[in-house]
Length: 184
Image (tube, rainbow, N blue to C red; front, side):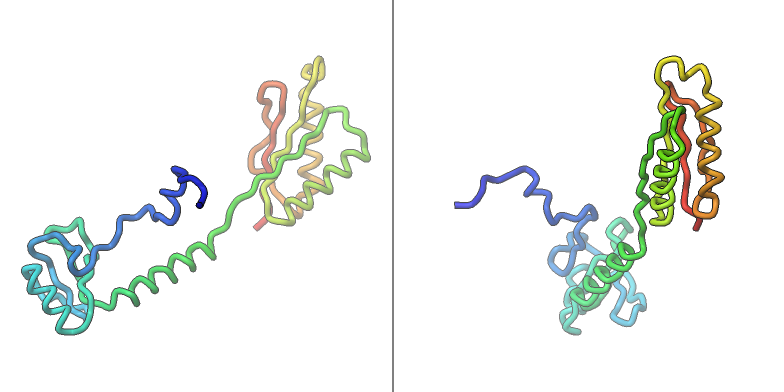
């Protein structure tokens, strides 16, 4: 016996776009027909359009179901579906995801600790990731926010050949935050 049915199983493999209706799946009584050459053949009853597609050993595919009457095209559906999948694959290939890395400092950071964290920021920027730099204030350190701002601006100056300030340092509660983006 297999594992029990999960509600997530139902959603696997489903696409968010509506299914494409072909041949007998088309429900309209008449359609605007486009032949296999891409030329309009006019508005025809559905039965006539299906017979035309069958004569040419092709499929009748509903390409614009929202139109009135729906637009149907005579084509090889499996070839059309393959080309759609290729386009979707190319679109996924060329999209990039933006990753935001975070690094935290304290206002009383030691020189060696600063250099180590600066190295991490450089590595993140070289990998084309955005960096959220946070200065955490505790207790009475909040009385001197200019110390935190000085550290953030010094960091931005030290890594300016790899990244630019996307949002200037600003105080958010007990934290001062600055966003850096890699140079394109």
